[in-house]
Image 1: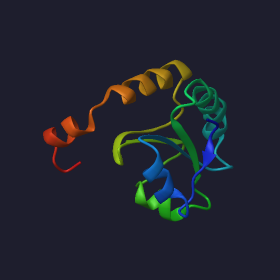
Image 2: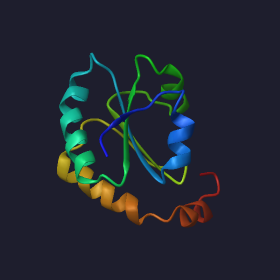
Image 3: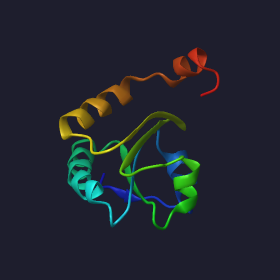
Image 4: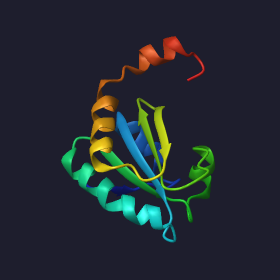
Length: 118
């Protein structure tokens, strides 16, 4: 699956149709975002069964606010509608691949039992 554009208009559908969601919050003027983009694209191509989306913070203010994005690039991962990871900055490709592997393993029901506020 290639990287998809995520907006306020399609976010609900993305959540309904995908168990694991990777979101890259970015902006066109952001130099670190430009460095991270090809890394994110390559990892997305290596994991076609997962949803990889990009959120333009210049146009999607509501989503940026909903996810409390304070700096970019920021990677947010949701599993079963629950945020399981959020990190700002450029993530190296090998680290991002490791994060993908860990995201697959996480049992959200266990997380919720451990921290009911999730």
